[in-house]
Amino acid sequence: MSQHGTIKVTSSHRTTTASIPARTSAAGFLAPGSPDPASTGSPDPASRSAQIESELRRAPRSFRILTGDRPTGPLHLGHYFGTLQNRVRFQQLGADVLVLVADYQVITDRDAGPGLGADVLGLVADNLAAGLDPARATIFAHSQVSALNQLMLPFLSLLSVAEVGRNPTVKEEFSASGGGAMSALLFAYPVHQAADILACRANLVPVGKDQLPHVELTRTIARRFNQRYSPRCGFFQPPDPLLGAVPLLLGLDGQKMSKSRGNTIPLSATEDETARLIKGARTDRQRHISYEPAGRPEVANLVLMAAMCQRRPPAAVAAEIGSGGAARLKAVVTEAVNEHLRPIRARRRELAADRPYLQAVLRRGNDRAAVLAGDTLNSVRELMRMTY
Ligand code: TRP
Image (cartoon, rainbow, N blue to C red; front, side, top):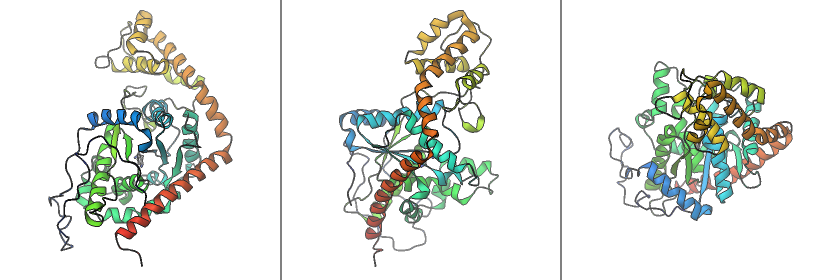
């Protein structure tokens, strides 16, 4: 069992090997409020992320990074700046980059429909078009990696229902469902996500703020597994979350950008579609264009969009438009977005036309993930004395 490189930044949050009281009675070992000797609060994620960024530049090869998306439709500009570009940057630095097509996560809240296959290969195309190199990065789908899914069973045994229920996303979904209609898979999905991460022995998980509790739960699972089954060697390294440093783009209506709200610019959109989408974006009544994220969020967001595409400070973009008003602003944004995405879109079109190639890339990624997850599962079975 080969442990992937470790992050030598601080050791304050690392797994301890302190002796753990033996589990003498089955009842109550997960009782709410029972102290978890291993949960030594994590360091502030923002400052830790800055430390990790510098460590990434110093020793990129000691990082195995897992990120993922649900295949529920084509990726958009927010994904591009928020995650895709970062994946490519990690790859260029020399880290081991794994990208998960989280197909089992789709069925947490809907049926697997006839379009799922196209969405899965669409994600592969989005990632490759953005610059991921299939010879270096590993793109895989979790339904194709059985050992990964099997790890969910021992992991579920390490958490109480109450603990999983305290996960903010699970909690929200539970109340949105009226407290009953939520699928049991949606309830358990943060545990499945922990299996994704730990199966690959990833030590770094780039996330948005909303996903931090999932990584925290993964760390809890890693520590508990270590306490119970591997107190001497600390088999699982609790992974670190990495918060993005890139400012968040809002949707064209000024709300959170999301596929389901229809306020995005899909990477796969044509230039004309992009122009039409941006034309419909919300602005305000002031003619003079300025960059004031707090006071004028919609206008600031459009300015930011152009600025990110042109790699310029947003204030410079706003100053140039000045009294040109919303029409000029939208023309500038359209031009900037289309210009920036042109080569990516051209690559994406080529890739999308070559289904066998996308399938081959995915198959190769699945194979590598299966080796990693298989090794992990074998070690886990040994540590749990489930070898007969
Ligand atoms: N939950 C993530 C999302 O909806 C996708 C995901 C699944 C993921 N498993 C993961 C991300 C593991 C990082 C690591 O975007």
